[in-house]
Picture 1 (cartoon, one colour):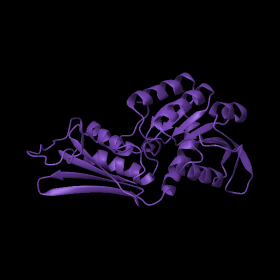
Picture 2 (tube, one colour):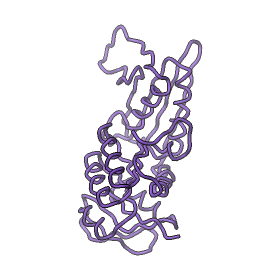
Picture 3 (spheres, one colour):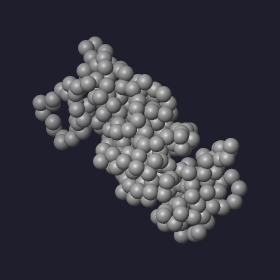
Picture 4 (tube, one colour):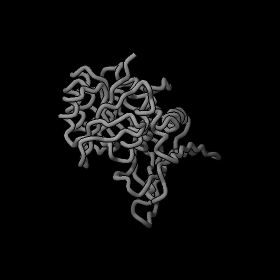
Length: 272
């Protein structure tokens, strides 16, 4: 079986470098090109000493010249959407881990993938533990009336709250079938201290140097609480999920949202 060919968009970023390393380690994948807005050289040296691949800031030209099966994107939302339009129109499958995509963005990615007959996997978090946490939070949501989320990331993260926290809260509300009960504070001495609100779920964001990514979901009821927590200690944890997505996306058509949808976890689904 021939390896699945991959181009990495955002290849010079922190996540892009991890993706490059992971793709090069897998014998069933082949990295054949790299794209980054900061590219100043025409070649990227691969970490497994297998040579070099073309590197450019021009995504369209790389896709036209290299004809990959999959584009893996870890950039920013605006760049991801531009990349999705270009790649889908050229028949390239999409794996997107960029945070901050809106519901309208996801709907457009679904339309693009359907109309161009390609697959698209978009996940706010590619860590396997985060996918399991989402599954457990979705299950617990049916049995509790109150819930809050605390998400913690490094101080360079561009958006707040995280895409993972938003996806978790929405999945919990969907599973419950109605908003959670949100206890109103009679006197908020510091504006915003109760966090942002999604259908009764208060979401709190922490940004500090030294963190990578963590999320805790806390459910409360009379006389008891239930806490679910996932901690990321390095970006390597995302790579098994990314590799699963690359291998699965070539078998599909249309949008698959969330890594849990590829892991056959109850309650996950495809499309938007």
